[in-house]
Length: 277
Image (cartoon, rainbow, N blue to C red):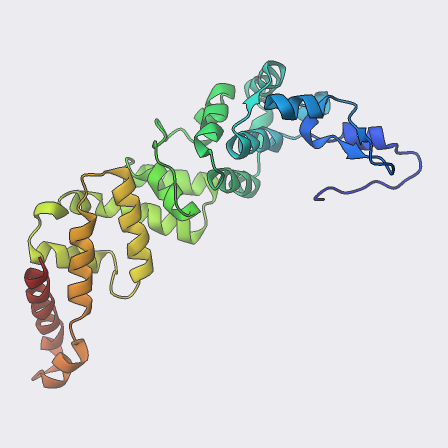
């Protein structure tokens, strides 16, 4: 499943398996059910080892990312000889030709795996982290949640220019880019939420577009809570609930003019937040 089968008579099964990237992917079953395993994939699977099948591995630098992704999925270690080959590919410039869209495809899949920290360890060990992710000096201990949340967690300590550079290099999609930049821009206000005034809390809610996009604000709070346990997420949730409950339509109907509606709604929301806290 997931592989192209070469049915040409001149291509043997072993030839086909030899084209695979890793030994754990280079196994098959005969018609009688016996295992065909010419490269020791079963042993490597049992021992938790990611090992390349042949030197053909070096023909496609995306395979480095695939190894890192499989490490993130299974928690496996990379065989010494495979790590040496990956280092050589990076040092020789083979990885310079990586297509950004393919990089994001593998990177985001690795980010979603059960052990995403292993992906970064592998990329660091082979030298590709410094090339693809130079802004990332450390990986958060708690990389959980959706891919946009995990990506924003990586970007949490960065400056806005660094987040933009990282997103551009990886061709990060809109949702991931938006949340990462939002977390970066709102970080000081989020950290100050525990002692912020109702007015300051409303300004944060407005800056984060929390009233129109409550689900994204929920993701932002998840990022903040995971990145910095000192962020008062509960207080922010209470502030949003109170402010969102204000009937802006009723206030608009009673307003003397259109121009005063925003300030009246803001005043009502500040009052509601103050009561909720």
